[in-house]
Amino acid sequence: MLLPDARAAIVATCRELAAAGLVVGTAGNVSVRQGDLVAVTPSGLRYGELTPELVGVHRLDGTAVEAPLAPTSELPLHLAIYAARPAAGAVVHTHSPAATALSALVDEVPTVHYYAAMFGGAVRVAPYATYGTEELARNAVRALRDRTGCLLGNHGAVTVGQDLATAHDKGVYLEWLCDVYLRAAAAGTPRLLSGAEIAAVAAKLAGYGQRPPVA
Ligand SMILES: [Zn+2]
Image (cartoon, rainbow, N blue to C red; front, side):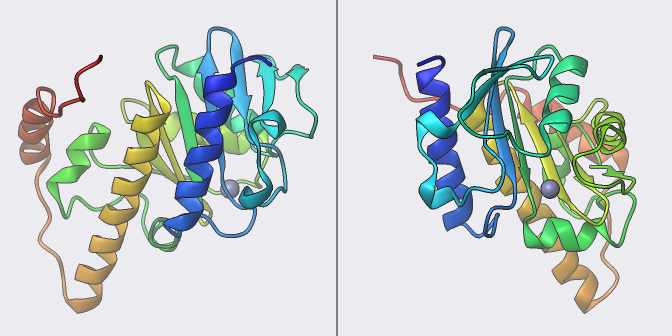
C-alpha cells in the first residue's frame, strides 16, 4: 500500500474532526502530500467507515494511483493549493459551524484576537463558488496568499500546514477564532487588534511551540 502512514493519519484526523464537531456526516475532506503523490479522503463516506485502504492516492494532476473509491469532490481545491504552495504538506477542509456562519457575514475574519497571527494575518473569506469547481479552488488559493487558513464564503474553512498535525491544529484554532468573534459581536461591538499588533505577535509566535523529543 502506498503512503500507509499518511493514510492512517488521515483516518485518525477525520475521526478527531468528527468527534470535535468540526465536521458532520460526510462533510469536509483531508489530504496529505508526499512528493508528487496526494492521499485524500474519498467522496461521501462516513468517517466511521473510513479505513486507510479507502483513503485514495492520486498524483498532483489528479490521476488515481491507488484509489478504490472516487475522491472527495473537492479534490481540485486540494490540488490547486499544492500546486500554488510547494511547502504545503497537508490541507484540511471542514464545514465547522462558527467558521461557516462567519463566512456568510464578512469578507475577512475580524482580528478580535491575536491568534490571527497564527494564520499570517487576518484570515480572508474567498468569494462563493459552487463546491468542487475549479473556480472555488482558484478563489481559495487567492484568499490563502501569505496565509495558512481561509474561509470559503457561505461554505466552510480551509487550513494548510507543512504536515497534517499542523493543518488540523490550525483548523481547530480557526474555528475557535470565528466562534470568539461571533460571541463578541453578539454581545456588542468588539474592539479589533491593529495590523501592527498582529504582526508583533506573529514575530513572537515564530519562536514558539515545542515538540516532544524524538526517541
Ligand atoms: Zn466543503
